[in-house]
Length: 190
Image (cartoon, rainbow, N blue to C red; front, side):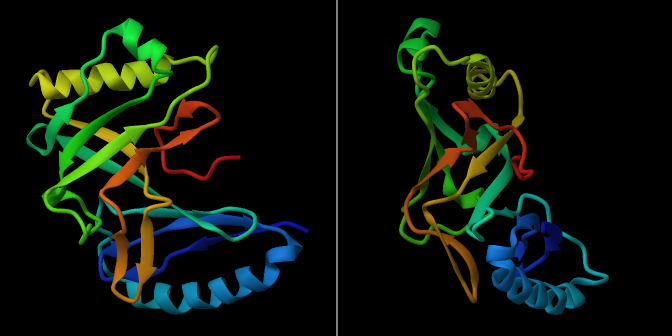
């Protein structure tokens, strides 16, 4: 038996929303979370939802995954690792950039002023088209050819949840990545 419900917990940071598919094995988790959701959702009625806030998607086992569609602005991009196309391919599409944490919507109390955003490595033979396109768009942003760029980030495993909301435990996050490819949305994966 499968069922689906939406989750709208409210934290000090803003609103986190997502959807959860779960099986009978995790029904207790789902019922507990649904009760919490209904209570918190009642408080949300009539209030504006802030943009640039994390979305939570639950795995079938009930584990939360926090994703963020972030509007990266030119002034927030501090440094992008420079790679030729050949180096990019040799690195399996792996690269990193440094951004100013000041405008980042999730607090990073253990970090001075910079967050590192990493694109994970991809095994040889994988299609790097989406990753390379993103990398080129980031280069354009760094060179001032564009003013902002939407990037999708995975906050796990360096995020913790508390009564105050979400906070990063380390000074780095990852680009959202699944099945050896960049995922440019915050929706739950099938």
